[in-house]
Length: 409
Ligand code: ADP
Ligand code: MG
Image (cartoon, rainbow, N blue to C red; front, side, top):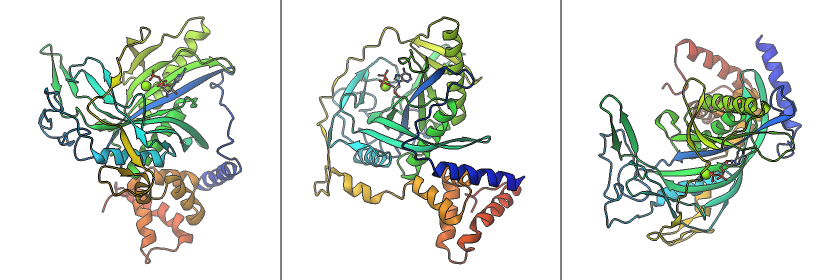
């Protein structure tokens, strides 16, 4: 059995190598319903790993008691002003470099107005008109337990820096809502992708790779169950060759499984509607944990966010080369601090250690396991490279037997 799997993986890898990622144009038709295809684009919010918030000195560790990590600015006390956190800018620059984006040496901030109890100022500061980075891409593998890995590339439209909102807790028993502002003002990077994905699996695999890249470069903690990475999936269905269909947006997906299931559900729902002569309504939908998406609010009347330039923040300037100015973030200095790209590490494991491609993907997707492998290489008493793949497999099985994992000291 093991041998059959191994042979299948090796064949898969040969196929992957013989096909250039950039020239991979083939579109997967929508399952067996040929003639139709699904189109998916993602908006990902990643919480920046920083000690203080984007525009205030309040702490970002909100395991503390409710409303205790809140500065006067975070609760929109009159007269307070935003002070941009340098660490957040550096994190956005690192993310942009890792995602092959073009950094813009001048970008700016805007106010996006909407009324929510957990956003006391009545607006969010974001980078609507002039984002910090545009036009990147990320290579990833679409794979599952029973689908061999296929190399893909997704274009990234833009990366912008913005602040998070607070949290509203609905206390249904007492018919009241409570607001916790600990999260209000925490720095986020929003990553908007092009709509080049076609299945729920692809969307989930892309999100997984993106999460891993952001964790790897130290920009985001990546803990999805804590809301550190949240994905909105835009989904539409069309006949192949026709113009884009009307899309829906499934909000706040916080696990890869949810992304895959929600997108699949949404594709099926829209396909059924369209093939019966119905129409898809442009709306925001939520995911209900039972594998379904449900309508949340109508987007047909486009919400007017009344965007305006943020008057209390000057343009954000970056320098291309080194800079002595303590107020200027240097792109080239950050580039020097970035670790080796995950894609390069994966290739190295496969080519130098002889790891199965799927095992290499799993290794890179598990920070503890990757650290373990790298530590082994640094340690001269470890087995030689040639026997490494075998040895790692044995070690993994032994760990599993004792219910441990690679992070166990
Ligand atoms: P909005 O202003 O409503 O947020 P954007 O133009 O910023 O819209 O696009 C948001 C996301 O939706 C992007 O990832 C984009 O690729 C994707 N998208 C846009 N149109 C479609 C469509 N018809 N089907 C699927 N995804 C789409
Ligand atoms: Mg958007």
